[in-house]
Length: 166
Length: 350
Image 1 (cartoon, rainbow over the protein chains, first blue to last red):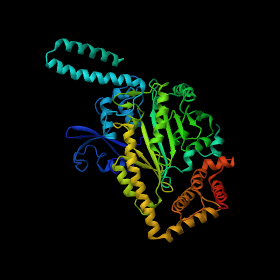
Image 2: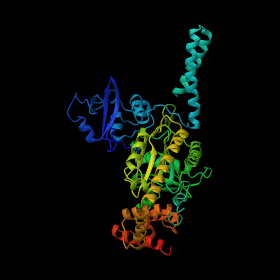
Image 3: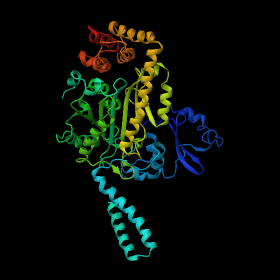
Image 4: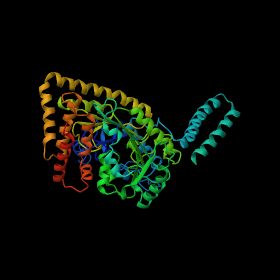
């Protein structure tokens, strides 16, 4: 599973993984060789590639920020992930979080799980939900100047954050 | 269970007689799961792979699971038997040809299987005959939950189940419906279907999944999106899409019958004549002819041939199946002769 198909011709396998800067927002683009060539990718730095989404293109050769970071658990970098299209371990999802968020948005149109959770994860999910709720509560309580209540909520938030970090 | 038993009794889903069986061959669901405490397959050393296999084997063989599974190590199986499992859609081609300690746990009627050390540590799969997506999902969900009792799966609240390839993250759920669309192909309407499906984020593949070309008018439709939607919603969407394709295919089948019945009859009966008489036949040709015969049977253009027999011929005339039946290695030329003979024998006296 998981062969990326060229997003332009929607036919060939995508072998070029480009970072496209559009209105200052970087996004991922997967192209096959011929579409990448058509888009002028091999032509050094062609800034007149107006036909491709009217955007500027950086070749994958120029690594995006943070791609030198190695996962301390499995040892791969984001560039190595991109070359194989396979991650090295579960921890990569945290180490390459920002890059993966962009990629997941591109693939799935979403970055947040909405399905089943394992029983062991249930407790954690509940804690995270409680944490988010408490943080919202805290804002309200602080505004209404109920400082005793605010201190209580802060303690609970700290306790939950420590538990979740484990 | 021995491999030979796979030959003697075709799996339940292979009969191709489930709901909407004239068009829908099978409904398949799969879940990708990884174990929290092991690295993913790309960085797993041979020693780690063995450790994973040793760790999961007893859990998969646990008699308390909702379905009893039998574990096979693929390294212990001859290449031919591994190919047989591919032809039965029980393991992937990549898994058959892979390296290192890896295996598959199979349920007795072949409707459920768990690949170990494929692209992810575990790949659960349930296949049902015809259109039975809810039933297939219920079964795989029960097995997944039972396994969760003894295995700690890699999961994050934000990303869901963590998979080796981000294309599977979230639910890890891929649902595939195998369709027989000969009329849409004959009417040159497939491009239209393919384009609409792509727009809806579905992928369309051939009989054996990724990278295979459509053969014998069989198309496999799968969801692409696995993250951001609940399992039930992914299934509900597929359940809306498939009936539209069924309507389309059936409309064109009846159009073929109405517009030019002689042409359709000729096509079906010629296919039957060749299958019944050929002395050697390559698998591409037999697949095409069986596809035409299947259409004829479903439209009653030809009678007296059970749909189940036609479906079985697709399976048994594949290279590894023929060689297992003959109990010897055959080169492609020899296979073509054996294939023709096998088909002739099965169609005899009908």
